[in-house]
Image (cartoon, rainbow, N blue to C red; front, side, top):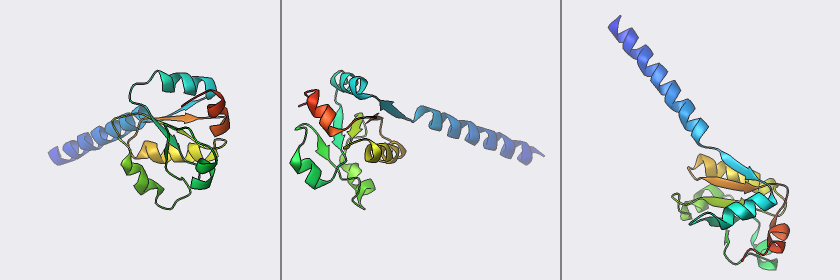
Length: 128
């Protein structure tokens, strides 16, 4: 009987811990102006471009890092980033960055994802 109570207690604790972890880790989806403002006001922010190398070479934000979402090694390549610093992720129009943001989130990063816009609009906002 004692073992059953102990096991029940452990099960409840593990469920509560699991739920609290899921609630605390999420992707912050931001529209263009909020994304730019939050990025500019966030200390040690990492700006991540998940487009292809060809897209990046055709036009890039100088302070951004490139990790191609379409590369099969994407999940491995994000290990180059610093988990103690928030990651602001974007692509060309928002599809790849949304998927990349989920991978980053599951890997333990604090993530801000640009929604409804992409590189072109960020460049117009003057990010350097």
